[in-house]
Image (cartoon, rainbow, N blue to C red; front, side):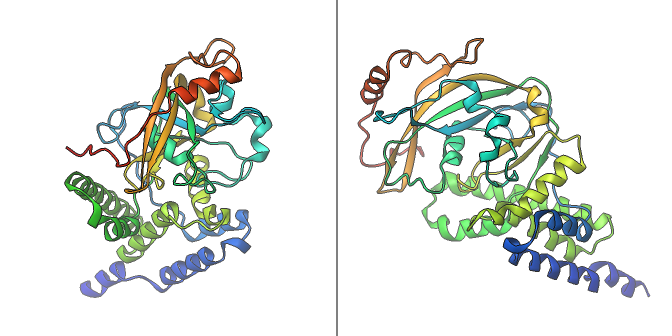
Length: 353
């Protein structure tokens, strides 16, 4: 009898197979499924979603893997300030670069971590990652040269309770197949470390589900399904974010103690991490400074270099950012922007040594 009992706990049950089939049906029909109905069905099918709780002492920087995090960076692509402007100038006020104010939230569309009309504080752990993440679908860096960013730095004044969405092993394998031949030794080493971290977190999440009574095969499929849905690279329309929205809602609403979620950066080819902070935890975050950043595209290598033009700019009591060179007329500011445009080489500089 013992071998038979062992198989009961290892092989998927008929019910578990039906759950996976139903989840796949939901995934294929996101455009016609009501979001509230989707949340109810996923909650009924999978009461326990897979995510980790990294061991954080506080929020600092990304130098040590989730052990010393504190600063985060939030980016906005600059816009023309008027119809006569020829250069895109940085934003001037904190309410333009912080959490979207209530009066503007009706304009918010569905994102990876937010529902329509819902404000979340998206940020990254490096300013370059933040800049890459703020590029929108319709903005092509290889054709549009007049792109710049206002990037704000925020510091946690209190400890945040953070959940971690693991890397998708499927996406990591796709990366290795398509990008691996172009990687240098350093990039190969970093990728190997990410895969090892991913596998360790994945194993922990699978074991947690097994301890709750699910079969190992079902647990593995559930972990891979939800991490891949959260980290999928092919987004055809906003409906493709419904499952990741459900994931975020469950973490923030069902477990009210969580303030933020760390997840992989897709725009930065899974090489860095982002963080999304719930509005309820923004009292734990403090604006530190702002920077004005431009970039130059190197078509031969299809790479972009982000260049800080002004850094460490604080705000006054009224929330106005004190840019050194932008205190005068639009014409003066645009002349300054032209004067700081660098003459970049045609080839991307070799920084691997």
